[in-house]
Length: 479
Image 1 (cartoon, rainbow, N blue to C red):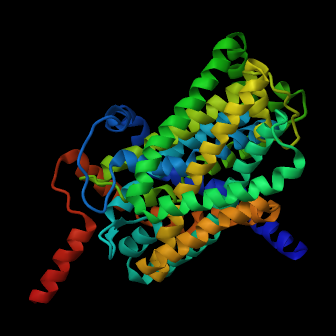
Image 2: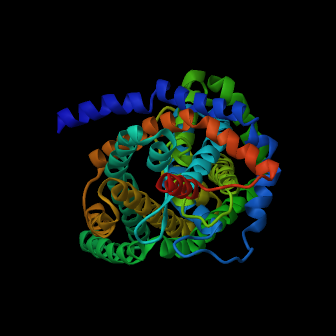
Image 3: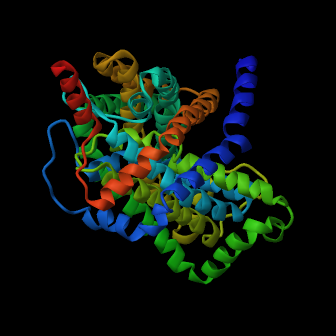
């Protein structure tokens, strides 16, 4: 076990270290330049095409979901405990200035996510069940050619290994911990009954996960389009209450964020003296939160019934904006304005966010934070379940979907009853390893992104990749 921990630590430090972050930000900047900073230049249009049409009803094709359902499924996986615990950790280790560097990573990440989604929709396929499937493995194989299929397989293997930890076991553990804390704080249950309770919670969650995921992407979309808006609005309203009640601290909070970005020592009393550390923690947690560069969210967006990939790409911009600019900033303000006792230089998690709430509203709000944490974690389980299914289908075919989902659902029982320290660390490493093949694919296909953007704004006819492949196959048969 010590050897595994040591090897994983070395790989993890590289994957989430400076070279990887520079690569992710560098490709984000490169894509931004090639597309003329579309995430800024066309931000208004992106909001109009996404947020402006959230309540628009429309028909969807068989085997597809609506663009909004695709967005909610992707947000279900990205908006999670990282937005609550991850931001708190960045603030504690990197100081308030880390939030500024989160914003920077999000601005570039909007274009990266836009490119991933655009490529995923363009190069998607229709599987044996008539369902749209896509993602990094498909745009690597179809965009770069069959000789690159091995790189797509590498991405899928890392994805399968990551989903059991990052997307399932650790999220279930978050749910049980939140429920346990709320029940113990109100003396509803003694410590002796916690193990049995957690086992029951694990079994119930396994049944729910299996029921929703085995129903396919349509059922996942139907659940997430209701759950994600509810949990996001619920969290934002509670957060706005903290900010309004503590309005006198808001100017100081933003001042500490901007000052701390370039001079963290002045804000943290010298505890965090390195601007480099503030940059590193802010960028790393920003990437970990919005997943721009990992390629995971594009697998959900690929199932959308949309007439042009760039139109769905705008949802990628909106996704990063909501995840990092809105929700992560909200968490930072809850902690700072809520006067949580930040111990700079010391690791921290969701307890800082909860403290910001309880300092403002009182101890009763711990029940609502437990509900929020459960919603965040459960939605993440659903989103990552879809990602794992797509990865297993790419390697083993569509028949592998149901066996994978049954195993995935059963892992929830382990997550509810086991100590997950090592599992979390290993899963985080595989999570980061997915970025390598994905970024190679996005970088090499950046020219395709530019062509699709030009095609969309020129109003020329768009022909999906799978239709082009049919036409080419027909021509060869005629010859």
